[in-house]
Image 1 (cartoon, rainbow, N blue to C red):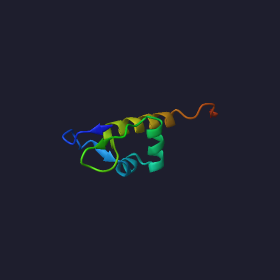
Image 2: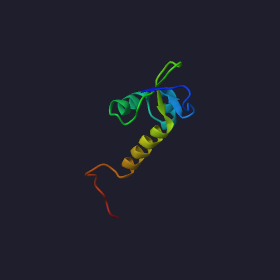
Image 3: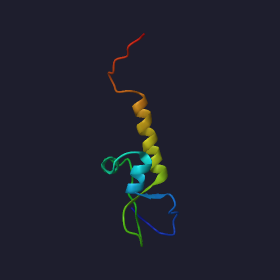
Image 4: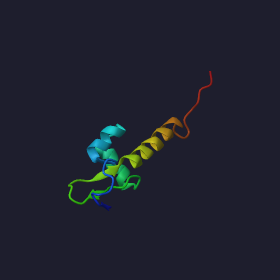
Length: 79
């Protein structure tokens, strides 16, 4: 998606910045993008690909929530 540079740019992160912020690798970001969990933006006048910080934080929140629930079929040992 192409954005106009006059739009709010402070919310845009490069893919390297986004990976560091989310604590994941660039490969993981590429997977999220391929799965359409994250939208990639290009900005007129700037080179590179960007993601919105709020979208990244939403995906990261969903990832953390799913990890807390445990994997399906996991055994629970009652003490």
